[in-house]
Length: 189
Image (tube, rainbow, N blue to C red):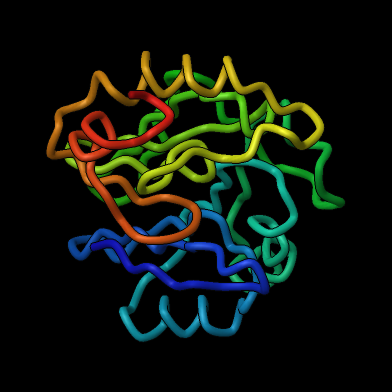
């Protein structure tokens, strides 16, 4: 089960990904509005196994501290973005690591470019892309640590090799698919 909550002043897509079988879940990019995130978990009877961040920008991490306090769940982020917040990570996300919860696993794909520690989370059929890939666009690369060529290269090599019908859950805006972005995203035409 995937639940999307739009949170914080910059309208970040926060995702609750839950296993119905075990009641375990992860929360991806808790950018604020923590009471709504907690309600989303409680309403579905889910317990947080991990708090995950696709990258360290404040609009995606603003609720981490409060959510950690409430859920006692460990927080994971890529080491290259770990200094972006005041909260100390409980562990780091590296390329190829699989974060397991319930009967699911999310594989970490390191896709720097929007930020040095940008990652995507992949499970067959779905990929959570943070600010790496959007419907019809890509993340900004004009912020400190940004790199346009690196971002484009990461999308081509690590995302566009996924099945065309893989659902893309981005950090902002509407959902899309890998096939749709390969065909029509202006940055790759």
